[in-house]
Image (cartoon, rainbow, N blue to C red):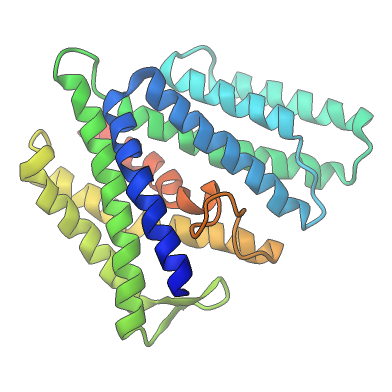
Length: 273
């Protein structure tokens, strides 16, 4: 990473991180809008990636599907079966009139994008809205999602610097040649340590088992999410999902780990908290 890119990354982070933390604490319409923006821009960037493979996603139906999934996360309107049937009918029927490449590629890529990005972004909302909006209870969702973001940021940084200093064994050279097992272990350890340090500060409402499990999920699943997005980009033959954020790449690049981590954390909260 060049010095210029590092400077850009730091400057963007200085402005963006406080804004993200504030939106997390506010919750409600503010956090919904924030999450929806992440999902829609990520889907658009994803549609550009798969276009390099000859797939033409149905961008507008994809947008509509993602919007419905996020709305349904906070206000249950329909079951998943009804959603999938409706989406499949619309996507396949629209291909009759579209005449824009392969129906298999087009419908398949659109479905993957809607479910991958839409469902997983909905899980981010689900974590923020997990605790009832009664008094101080509602702030717990904000504190938890902030902790997950911090854990991911620390994990990414620790994996990068640990891998740079000590990396000897390649993690997935076919997917990301610069990532190492040593860096991944550093990321995992620091993700868990971060959650441990945050417990007495903002996560007192969780017990130690919850802390360790959520920290482990961030350290393992977050890094897998980064690898999955890297695999998609490598398949498309590009380095970044877009150039939207100077020094950082695209929105899909920046939020790939939280997109993958959120559904696993939400499942843990639902079944074990």
